[in-house]
Image 1 (tube, rainbow, N blue to C red):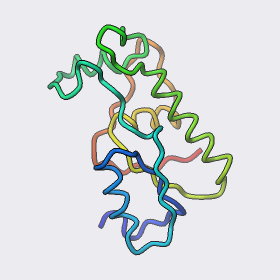
Image 2: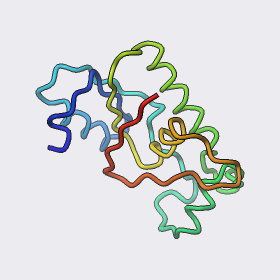
Image 3: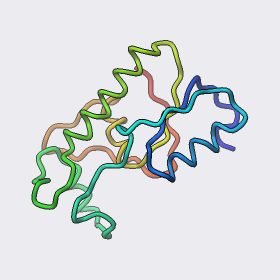
Amino acid sequence: ALLMDTYFDRIVCSPLLRAKQTAEIIGEGREVPLIVDERLKERGFGSLEGHPFSQDDFDSWWKRNFDFAACGMEPVDSLLSRISSLIDELYEQHPDETILFVAHGGTFVGVDSYFNGYPADDETLRFIPNCTIRRFHR
């Protein structure tokens, strides 16, 4: 219902089931293409996947200089790179379109950084809560 009156030309979503189902629901009754793109999948947290975490944990895990290899976590720069490549590609192919992304909280940390600047290596990237609707402009 929140996006009922929102115009967009296409939906690009994560391949993960919850995001894909959400994108399909949003797209019902609209004649817009729905594109599934692997680059919007959630960040991999390795051995820490699914475990509860504290604010201090979050602050550490979302710094670009964290030791990601120790727990098999996807490095922040890898996430930022895949998100940047997707957004750059979409701008090149569809420069005048409004595109709706349907993805995950971790993915949107990368989207936010693309549009609002990349924090320094020792700074925590900005947290984006789940179920948040954000508008970004280039």
